[in-house]
Image (cartoon, rainbow, N blue to C red; front, side, top):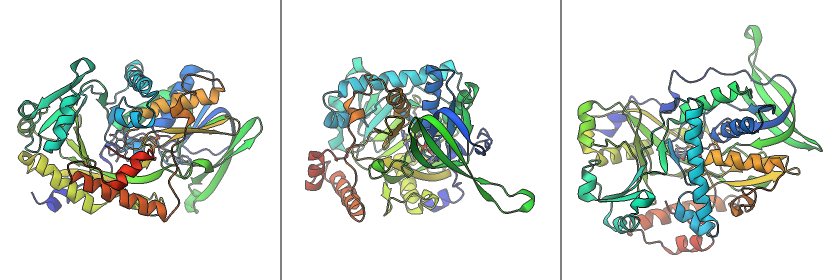
Length: 474
Ligand SMILES: Cc1cc2nc3c(=O)[nH]c(=O)nc-3n(C[C@H](O)[C@H](O)[C@H](O)COP(=O)(O)OP(=O)(O)OC[C@H]3O[C@@H](n4cnc5c(N)ncnc54)[C@H](O)[C@@H]3O)c2cc1C
């Protein structure tokens, strides 16, 4: 099918958020407050922090403040691959934190198990599917590494081309490794809304449409200043309303948005990622691709695709381009990128030519908070009354819960196993200011594309970045 025709009627709303189950807006904060804990940001990180804070101490007065609406940002528009890894893959953890990588892998498995337990305990309807993930080779040179990782006892199963053809039918596949235990699929927006339901049931006060403009030290407390738009009454003009919260502790879960702590403002850059969703497949179309195991799928190059089935049997197909805009800009206008959608659509039909008649129902994008080590970092301020977590890069659906655990430990003032981790104590290298950041990111992106065309061999720039701990490898 002509890709433009296939994309022509696609909605620009992220598929997961385009749902009747989307929660009704909660009123903004309009009066001053006191709280034991204020959480800034209503994505996964903020929501999991709130849930765990209440589980630790049900009497604690917890307030969550969200500038827009719960789950509207990365948390409501991602691929829904919920992975155990806290380090953007085992190998990336090994290159950055070799001494504690094994322990981090274990903590990641425990974190994923805890997510599953919370889903069950609170009866959350989040389309949770323990499918695992297939890493597929689409080039011959990618096969040996997958074959070597075959380790059935650990849940890693290698399939050669013939075996794989019985599992998912694509002419592009050369082999695959199935990580059967450490990735689950979720509907990410539903997970946000269900977490919202649960934390409100546990007594967390939640304010939407309320932006935190400043966080400042007041000796024994922290002053959180907020601003919100108030509808003009009787046709009058909208007005700005401001309020303050006097908080004993503050957790910052603002992800890719401008940091409320200056010290962390150069540690992430927003890199845009894009996805398409198809119309639902009918039985015949499903039959033509196999995929009865409904695994999440990712291919192995530096520029990779990720794809999966939704509960109503659509295919989400995302990835490939990673786009940085000069000056660390985050803007709704970048959420749409026709040239990337066309490329993704072409790649979709190459992957599944048997679905040539299938159209796309949704197309969207969003910024990923990329840091130079590609997994979350933590910092504190004002005598550990404020903690912050960010930098998940492409793998924050599962790791965000762990980030909440760490922030609560940091705010407790106690030394715990988690606060002593090198992962928690050591920040990644910051990105340089412009124009160097922009130039550096363009050059790195081009070098990664070149390596893909060169059987994965890394050129001098990537080797130099690897040597200083800033090398990306999907
Ligand atoms: C297209 C895309 C696909 C992805 N796919 C995957 C995937 O399949 N698997 C995976 O693991 N990860 C994926 N990710 C990454 C993952 O979505 C994120 O790492 C994760 O959602 C981060 O959660 P968060 O709560 O930290 O951030 P967010 O969801 O961005 O939430 C931050 C919130 O803070 C609010 N905020 C910011 N500043 C303020 C302020 N000053 N005052 C009040 N509120 C504020 C924002 O409005 C926002 O709601 C993807 C990301 C994108 C964009």
